[in-house]
Length: 121
Image (cartoon, helix red, strand yellow):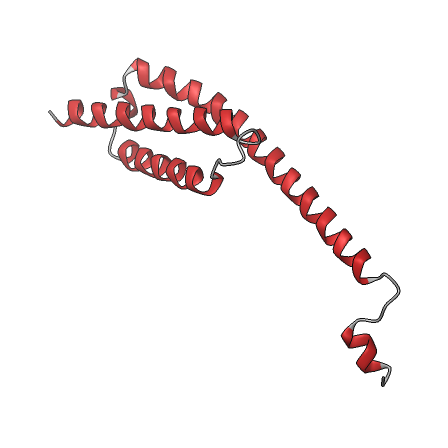
């Protein structure tokens, strides 16, 4: 009975994780309303649940379908890692542009409050 119950739970968590990863891979960088932080929290929760389930599972008892699904998830996670990294690089680039624009605006030939005070005006 425990094997069947554990098998069902593994299948359920793997299905949720795959759905979350597919959704994230489809929406990241394309949907401005997509909340990466929430998606990442859901993904982390599934990975944690899987690690707890596998801790109590003999690898010899894993169903062949779970093993196949795990290999598929590994590929999807690799794609996910590349997309998340690309997204973070884009965020960094935009932040750098904004920072540069703000610095250029501050350096428009007028004194800042600190410069004004330091010069004794």
